[in-house]
Image (cartoon, rainbow, N blue to C red; front, side, top):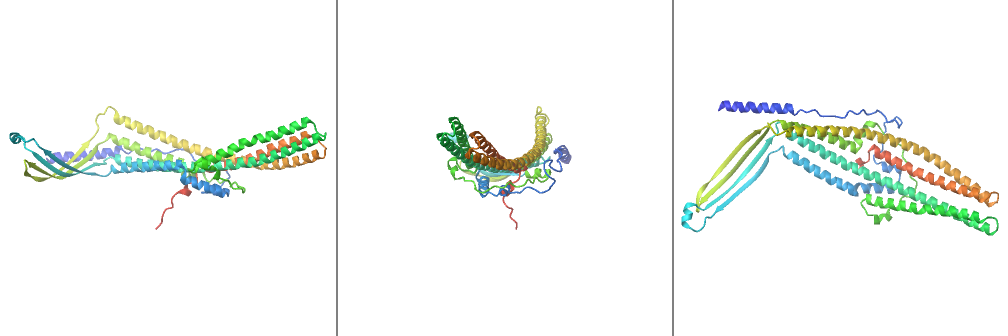
Length: 471
């Protein structure tokens, strides 16, 4: 008997040593080189503002963003995914602890009223209650690896929610500036259309006085109608963007009329991109990918443990009672304890396939994380270039608009004095319309480019995180 006990102890110790050695799988990490500075940004370590929507100086935008951060339906759905992921983490961690259950037994057997039959098979009453305990001892770290993987997956789900919130906030800002731009274009085109109609009225008056031809009237009417035709398309754009904003903030399109942009000017904040390495801690998509890579490392370790032994312990404690034909036979306590050590020998390649799947997932997740880093850097570089170019374009178009206004004034004055015909005046009108519309569009594109930069930098979601309580 002592020899058998010594053999079992040695076997268990060897199994534990093999398991711990075999489960030390190598974790993989990204090898992407992060540049020290963005190529399209001036050398600076200044980080972008956290609540970047406030930097535009538009209170309506700030209000809409905060509402979207809490009321957007995509954000609420993502929060439920986090809740489910956290529950999954609890399930995985529960495997590390013993499982305790209670069982109760009640049995009654009645063979009928035949006395002779009762002698052969007596009536039986039996009752008992017991406490069951079962526990898998985590020899190889398989259960700990599974619990750690579940925790990393839950963290990835949390970062996914933050990414959804950032997307909702960015979409609100994008649609808001699109709405502001559409309204600015509407104001411009209506003013220009009114000027065209005034020119048409003057040309018609000159025709009646014999100072203009029907051809001049037709040309003036064509210009006025062309200006009118541009209005419905802009009205549609304004309505559609209002509807989108209403849905983004958790409302309905039918209530979109209450979304009224500010009348004041909007300032475009300077571009402060910070350091490229900070993207890894600021962009929620990269944080989620990193958590997923960590989870895949743990899943790989968990799969490797499938090659090695598993130890199960079990125990049952309880009390049992028995009656035969109404006579109390007695009650007894019982105790049962067991230990089971299992190890795979042959399962037709299942364990090998489990490890191949885990390793393939690990490599795929690593590649996805590295690709995410490269794409994030590309997004920022593209956004910086676009914002810089749009600033230059906006300044140029602003000067061009002022020049076109001056040229139209001179052409109108010459036409009123009869020193030129209608064609130069209509050309000046068309030029002014094109330049003013282009200037308005450039201002809108500048605002949208700024939003895209903030989105690519990944910040803003931190403003809606709960504040940690300090004691």
